[in-house]
Length: 173
Image 1 (tube, rainbow, N blue to C red):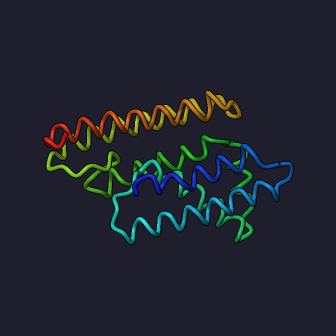
Image 2: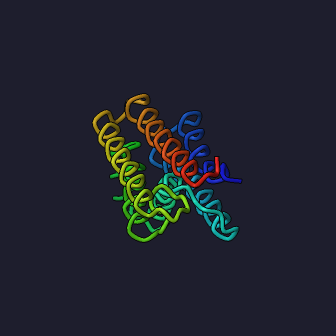
């Protein structure tokens, strides 16, 4: 069930890798389709009361915002996203990280624990990783490996390491 929230990103990546994207309309279609899928997946998970991955929430909000920009004819936003490439998604991940650190008892790490100090420490480390990933992605915009693959691998790997650490401390693993 947790992998459900990865479907919108998978749809987007599949579309941009295997479909012709010669025109702005082609890109808009990719954003519209994946944005609708992101909205539906997020809504479904929320109604099922499933704890959302903050990283996928950031990615899905990026896709939803791009789709909303197209529907509302705010094309300037997608022009910015086009310049940012994958680092646009990472800006959303960083914003969700900051917001969840301020507003959620589970922090950016997304783990239930009575140890708030460790949640804050792990969340801060994950946020630092997301900021570094954004910097790497922005610096190498357009490079599939350095701008797209490695930054996301870094964030997901760090989230996995920190989540395992937190759950081990709770005695769950």
